[in-house]
Amino acid sequence: MALTGLEIYKQLPKKNCGECGVPTCLAFAMALSSGKAALDTCPHVTEAAREALASASAPPIKAIKFGKDSILGDETVLFRHDKTFYHPTTLLIYVSDTLSDDELGVKLQEIKDLQFERVGLEYTIDGVAIVNDSKDAATFAKVAEAVAKATDKSLVLLSEDPSAVKAALTPLVDRKPLIGSATEANYEVMVNLAKENSVPVIIKADGLEALDELVVKATALGYKEFVLDPGSRKTPETLANLTHIRRLALKKKFRPFGYPVIAFTSNTEPLEEIMEATVYVAKYASAVVFKTSVKAHVLPLMTLRQNIYTDPQKPIQVEPILKSVGNVNENSPFYITTNFSLTYYSVEGEVETSKIPSYILAIDTDGLSLLTAYAAGKFEPEKIAEAMAACGIADKVKHRNVIVPGYVAVISGKLAELSSWKTIVGPREASGIVSFSKSLAK
Ligand code: SF4
Image (cartoon, rainbow, N blue to C red):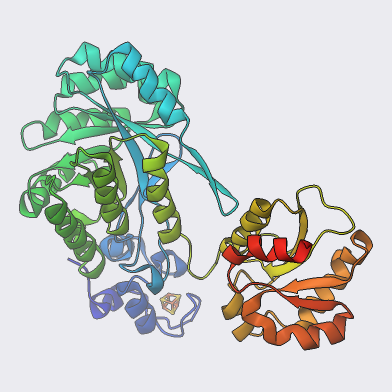
């Protein structure tokens, strides 16, 4: 159970020196109890108090690292707009050890091809979960080794047979895979195997009560590198379990659930499977294992993940510079837009589609979208005129026409006055650029 502010206060030095950043020990105790402060910021706390307060100062969801650079958990809020989410859901492709050599080769090539670029960022799948469907330890180890040779992505070794996990893990221990699953029947052997090899382990039980009990028993073995699997493979039940676990970990500081959670899809039809995975990415899986590795299926899931895990206080931005699209010349049209990535790349994409080489100047709006930037005074004629003068567009084109986004047509007059360029009101939406640019070229 989490300690109350007053219980924490009793353990503090009561110097009220303010070195922790708040004026009194009581205020610091309250901040600590609500997870808004770290115990280390008080330099006077005694070792005895530190031990007593360990549970109050520990992060509500432990960070678990495995594989290449996968970090699970370490989240502090239920809703992204409360602060931010830190570690994007780790996406793992299910690879069965019953695949033939040829099927495995095709699967691994598909996984390798899962590379995407969106709004200027490159992203890919995080890892592979090798599953011991064959129930044979030697086959499992052989397939795990083949996968490890083919990819440097993070690995998960999944079998409820500890001897199969051991056979696959031993040659791959340097890759620090996540192993599993420790169940009521095998948890002592499986947790000790994880402990001996310093790798994290999945604790799996059917339902939250059973999971709570199993985590407590596994913790008593002196190891805490856990990822939780609440067992259900039905979407509504899994969603409810994931939500309860996150709520109990954050709101009640319920320690047995203070670990990241892994979810597994069960739908066999790929599009339904991806829809199921989106539910788990949205709430609150730290890792999701799914079967499809077809690019068109995986892209929407990765897009959703990117959107959810973008810090709402730091919009994705492009560099606010003049960019040329295509083989520009002195007659090329000249557009202005904001440096919010989604807006900028929508404009750039439509300009590319128009096949009319053009210049685009991204105005520095701190990554705000067009109307938000205008309302915030960050897309104003004075600022745009300055940016136009500084970017050197006047030396690159012989005309003096600037295309202003239709939604902010209101700035046209002032911008023309300040820049001495003729302003042309462009389409409101980027999707109108193709027909607009063609009418301009006539
Ligand atoms: S630094 Fe420690 S002793 Fe000083 S006010 Fe903060 S909690 Fe109290």
